[in-house]
Length: 116
Length: 114
Image: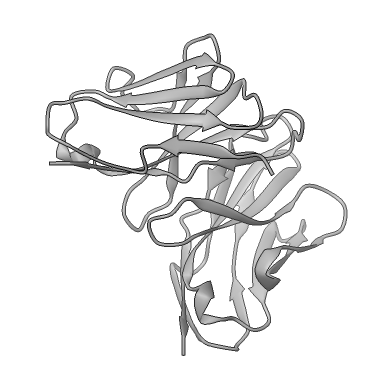
């Protein structure tokens, strides 16, 4: 199946700094990628839809200026958590659809962000 | 709008026993349904999916699920669980119009006891 890779898998940063998380589709092109957030022992909540070459679409309640999404190429989307605070600590997962398959999205392995 | 509910946030069963994890969905269009498994501190792994056709779907690791349109359910079961099946299980829904925008249920934590 298609492979989606996230980097880094774990990151610790200081409050007030920014952190960038990368999501790559390794063997296919993805015009659309999705970013999810998962709090401990909770489900995955969709944050935003990342569209190649255009602005991301954010779900209600997600701060656009806080979570910057860039989808500059068909194989890479990035999520930047700006001015991170401890409450931003979470598990972030991206997904991408392989247009050749057209039936499901493939998920990355996730990034554990800890803000201290 | 689509939504998913999972009855039972935590299920404990003995090794070798049958396990049934319940999932009900809401969708105004024919749904695509998925079950994912998440091991601690890891990403998601697709267990199985229903897109159309046969209502009984077989997945990896001996899991299977049955789509029931009238009951809007997609329950997951495994006849004989192993300790290694201890994990978090998520039921999810999407559809033909937005099949990559997946909506997840709250999850069920499965503990398999020796």
